[in-house]
Length: 69
Image (cartoon, rainbow, N blue to C red; front, side, top):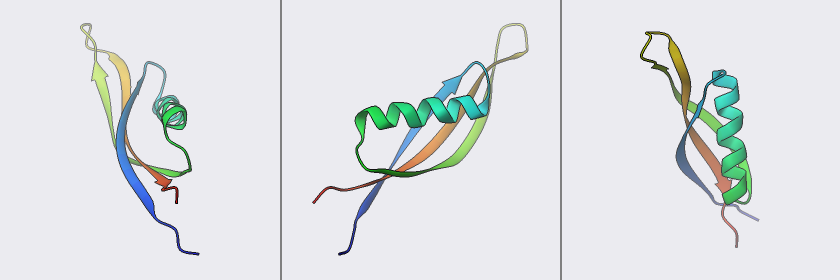
């Protein structure tokens, strides 16, 4: 049986780390999307606070999920 998947792009932010931002994004996607198969980190960026330090870690994820038949 053949399968078909869809890819959607999401962004997630964490004040702690890139790894935490990935976990936050995948967990949130799992609340809405069924059949998650994988996530690819497309981009990473840091957010700069008023004091000039890093205030957040942002990731752009491509999330793949299987389409239901």
